[in-house]
Image (cartoon, rainbow, N blue to C red):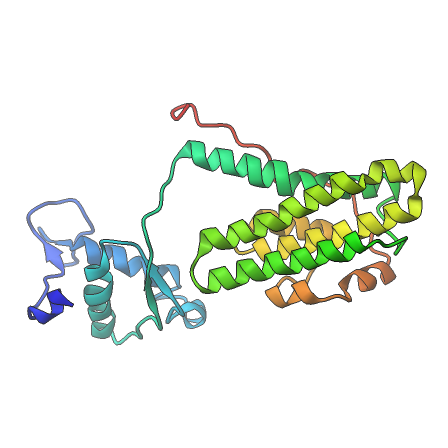
Length: 280
């Protein structure tokens, strides 16, 4: 606000004091001002100027999330650039906070939360079904209150992710989702379907069916974060409906079962990462 209150003046879109950058057509010695070049990437990423169909789908952006300390460029310069080109402005601009990144942190979280927790949960559940039930979806079996309790925890975890994401609290949303993953791992360890296979097959079916439902719900919820890997989990389940509303589709399992869907022996979806040599 202080910058605007101080009065606005014309801004040159080119520079001549250095030669690195995008050359200005028909203007020798001029390169594009870096913020013109950088901010325009939002448009070209949305299909501008050659892909009108994609542009119409993604622009104007419903939300433009920016980081700290670059507010002037995104809230003064960027709207001015768009208005000068007769292009619509983003519908909403919100400001983020500082983040931290390190290769070690990424490797640690991927291995702990995806490979070891969610990936291992899906792999051992679906592998067990493929091996011991010839891939057929488990029957209803003998239910237990723990089954409905787990599904309710999935509903809460997925809703927590959605609510947090709507409020742009991405880390908190993923933490809510991870609580669902941890609940599933606690459930499978407590129920031990590998032991039930010999002692109580009816109960084993109920446990495995509950886990299939839970894994599908978790995979749909995390799809916007890891679309390729979560999509592979859903492929293994034959789950075609993948919007957030599909999480609450209680009839999905019965339809898959009635259609005779079978689970093929799965391949691991979340391989463990190794720390890059330069960061080790």
